[in-house]
Image (tube, rainbow, N blue to C red):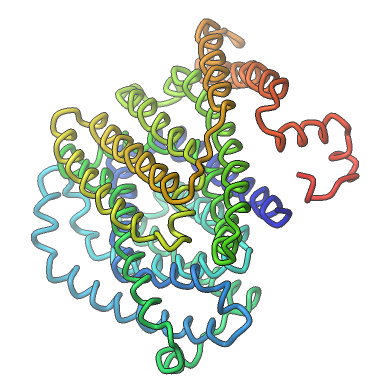
Length: 509
């Protein structure tokens, strides 16, 4: 567990630093500096990139993830790397041709409400190419148990470059076209740095693709798995990003620019899940390959309660500070407050189910998660088409949350039927009670005037003040009830002073 804790801690710090940078600038500063339409355009380009990359990626990165524990001491890794690079290149070529062919029917959906996107339609192609190879290299770093550097590039370097680019645009050092083309340039720069790290730092090698095909007795099953993962990733990405594509078609780029602010805030709850999941997955896969289900059960239980603890803590502080958060934004953004509540609740419940996706993905029952993902995709598309015209932004948020919760319930039922365990315990109820307690107490704390006639500073100070009070209210009973032994050990380490003096090992964290 030491490597999980070390890399998870590093990656969580990087992820939260990146999220903090993104939230400060993209959620609270840039809405006052650039229009909702430009924020929406950036969001639409990113959402199209994340959805469309699924097809040319071909699920190959997940084949590497599944079989690396078998291949790691052989030349099969570099052979598969070469095969994957070639096949993804062909996939990207086919994607580019199809994207060009279907230009007219696609832009028809945007020309009425989101015409600003049309001149930059073709920029999606280089974004998808960069993202396809970036995702593969990030998975390669994951199997090497080195996720902190790729996370740093993704979460911090990319955001810092985008922030710099936007300031150049705000101060008219760049015109609109240069700004949008520069947006693509940011992804080029981070990709080149990642490629250098892969080759020099992690010794990424790719050769003998023919030998992978010719000297591989399990080729059929590996490619079948890749096909299943391709379907899974298409379904998952449609679920995660479809709202950002449909919303501007119905309501315009300005509506998307508003919607993405509370969406990002609500998704902040899941930042630790991404970090812990990434570094836990190779170890989880290895335990399943060895049929060590006791280890899988213990890992799922331990991580499940820790994820829900972190989730309820962040959820409580976020909901309690919603009024203060939206007072930092232009008044036109206030319509997104209910989006925050819906998205945060959905993401919290997603964290409550532990590593159910990772367990099914790693097991012989991975076909179940593929089937469930297709069901979730159908639900997501149907609910978005049904609810957005009727409920606007709230409809988009509900579509994502309802399909996500349904997906998790069904996954947990399958794991219980096949393996006889789940991650839930009595402490889940304890955390729910503590969360309601925190929200209830903070609700009755009035808005305080720390500084006369300074709304922005007062809003920030009220958020900090409620955050400190809420943290104590949450952590004290959590510690006393011993909800998470890992949290209690960490608090004891802090109280002992050893963590400040260096008298500890990372394995103790």
